[in-house]
Image (cartoon, rainbow, N blue to C red; front, side, top):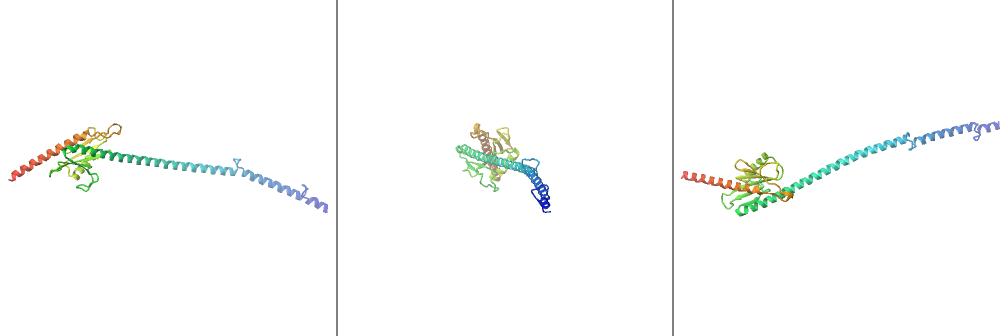
Length: 248
């Protein structure tokens, strides 16, 4: 009986119950560990862990692409903003340079005639506005001195807008004649374009290689304005004399 039990329960005996159970457990363990090893094998493209890694990598690539596009769009926006700011700054500097050059020209042009030139870009006028960039006072020592207003436009504007603004400038500065100066060749085709009896649009072209501006047309326009202002003043003086004589 003892011998039978020893053979039946001997783990070293593969034919014993314990031996069979042991072999069955070892086989199950090998199968389970083999299956787990296969499931966790990253080199196996069919394993769940490899599929999970591939999905994570795809998600990372999608996030990277999205982030790259967002960064690219932001960089483009910043570049466009910087270019726009630079262009505005350049345009502002160019406008200031043009106003300075205009002031120097007007002063030189008016000095021999004893006329007074004032830069009024930041000086409120009769309408409490700053419309009207320059004022030329003809015969400033005279009690009835006359004014010519000059409106500078370095930016592009249509003739209707220029004349409308010139009307405002004449009213605001109490001027008898107005000259609108533009550097844009697309606004008017001629160097001097008259509007009515008391307004001119003058085109001042830029000199080659950004070497200042050609103010020749403006010189002619100012001379016309002086003549028109003095001629009108003489007409008004004659009319007043006739009124005085008729009153007597």
